[in-house]
Length: 76
View 1 (spheres, rainbow, N blue to C red):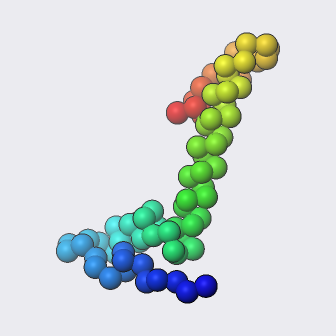
View 2 (view 1 turned 45 degrees about the vertical axis):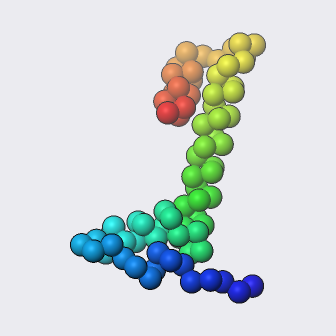
């Protein structure tokens, strides 16, 4: 597979710290291993949130109030 160079690596923003640069490459750089891991983690968190919301909406589930409160924290 032929990979194109990532545009993020070519032109850093002026005055950008090294840590800011690493975060930018991780979040917006989909061709890097860190970027792929970030994307996968973000997808997992979104799916978990959707599942919690769906389970919270099913009235037939007799969920204790403390578990329901914990689930509401995970929704957000």
